[in-house]
Length: 350
Ligand SMILES: Cc1cc2nc3c(=O)[nH]c(=O)nc-3n(C[C@H](O)[C@H](O)[C@H](O)COP(=O)(O)OP(=O)(O)OC[C@H]3O[C@@H](n4cnc5c(N)ncnc54)[C@H](O)[C@@H]3O)c2cc1C
Image 1: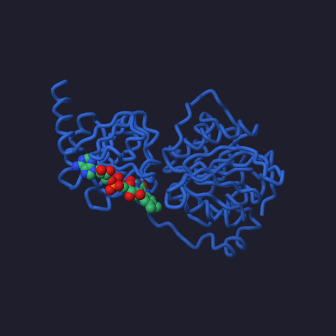
Image 2: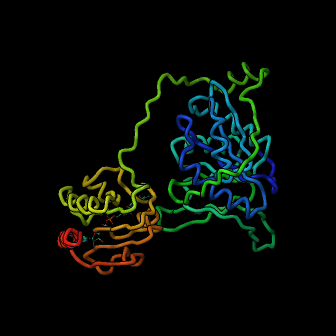
Image 3: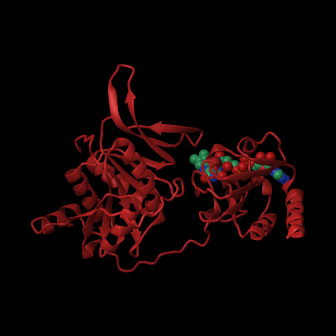
């Protein structure tokens, strides 16, 4: 257990890949900075790896005050036990009040291990965060609580989860839900260096924690083929598209705008399109300039992944479909007729 520390910093876990700071971590820097400012505390970043010191200035320019840097040959690749050991030691020593991780493969592996080792608890896959004091009915005031907001009960409600007792308060956050903070190259900060294992610890701790139980022989990174996150226009299809062949219409429309094609889970489950295009609670979170939802009913699990799009256009044959309640423009009709008309109109204009 880690003792409560109301003046503790807000921390973000700074994830790197081949020496590059990941965008998801930069998103966390922005939100973390906002939370730290509300609490009147500093924001720190945990940076672990081999030869990653060069990433520290990138963190400073995105709003970080202190970088907790742990470098070692053995930390060159992410391995659960050694990384967990490092983060737990840092938390015990510096007692941050909040620690945020990206809900990436790494974050989803690391954060629960750290939560278990520090007995602190964790809310996974948050879609928003805030801080506030909360007063119980009995009058007891809980200060500096992290409001961890995420869909719950199969996505049917959006729950705010707080942790009164066990600190640090920890959450993983979904990619794309926070905007990137502006880089300020004039900002600077402090690097606090810590060692991975001190000499006394080396043999005993390694054995005890099985730190070297996994050896990385070779690493191959599969590049994402679909980049929904950076698309300015997304044409997304749902069960109403009806077939793989009909999805070609959506590809044609997306191509006209230089955009990307997304999908609802029902479309993916029906085998109309690949799972990497799924948008929503268990897919990607996107916020394009224009989101065209075709044959998508607008269930909450889909909405949480796209409702922050700047302009939403919905095409649906059912005028009562819930998607129309969040759409800026709605077209009631059969998408097999509407999309060809749109294609024709756009082609004639250009
Ligand atoms: C834990 C959990 C996680 C989930 N995660 C996700 C997620 O990440 N993403 C996601 O999308 N869903 C997710 N879902 C599923 C979600 O609840 C819905 O089932 C799904 O979003 C419905 O997809 P849909 O709108 O394409 O299909 P439907 O709800 O079946 O809607 C089809 C729509 O198409 C319209 N339509 C039919 N024919 C036409 C036509 N010819 N022209 C125009 N419109 C037409 C209909 O009127 C209807 O509104 C999740 C569910 C659970 C329980």
